[in-house]
Image (cartoon, rainbow, N blue to C red):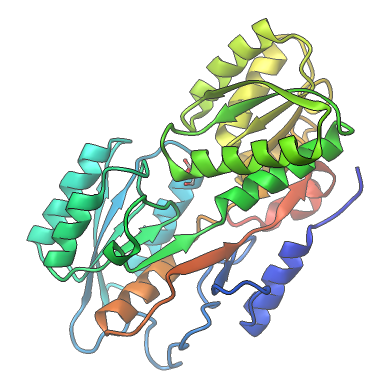
Length: 347
Ligand code: AHR
């Protein structure tokens, strides 16, 4: 496999340096080693004013997080909470952990509305079922920021989506898988949470790219592992029993890939060699596995969205316009460069 840092990383560096974007219409946020704070195309905060300056009042934000299903999610939560704790003079955060349940996220949103927060942030656990509560927020004059995952609602019901292009992540994962297995062989797919945009779109992107360009690659099984390491392992165990001749596993996140690696080892096979892995996120654990030769590739998805989230919330409170999709710029990392970059990873 050739040594490479995919061009999007270079592009991310260019974006961070020039605030010029990568040819996309939407403004983009850089990931890799730097938090995504300084790359919006719109107005840059004045040097002597905090990014969340909303005059004499504090910016009060409610955030309904999904839960703690993965290392990626923990990194996103930490990014949000750290920003809030470092800006207590200008920001107040009301944080809810919904423990993977949409009903808990809806309850949290209703409670934020009652408390009359300035802006509501939400990482929707699933795509559908939000119309009513979003309309309630809109009636109360509270804008909604979708963070990291999309919701299947009319665009008028939310202010902006800040996050990655999950379909493109799936397509890139397919290209990486094809390169790793020489364009042929049987593979399996570990899907994320059923109904989540991150799962639906990563599957669509991957499956479409394979079907369109790699006729000799067959996806012989595809099942949810709910974005968790434990379920990734469990599902991989059953995949291995019914498909002993597979050469690769594509996991919608790194945590499930790490679970799959455990299952492959327990089956007496060598992950990274007998069965290659391609996954999404870019968490520390998958870099450690790549350095150990047990994983092959991760497609990055930036979780360090806290600063941009609050900056965007401040703009909304100030009545400024924001882009409908603030797209993250993500890289791709393969095992042959993992050792060189692992120490610089921020999550
Ligand atoms: O929505 C982003 C996804 O959610 C991450 O890839 C995954 O790790 C998390 O659970």
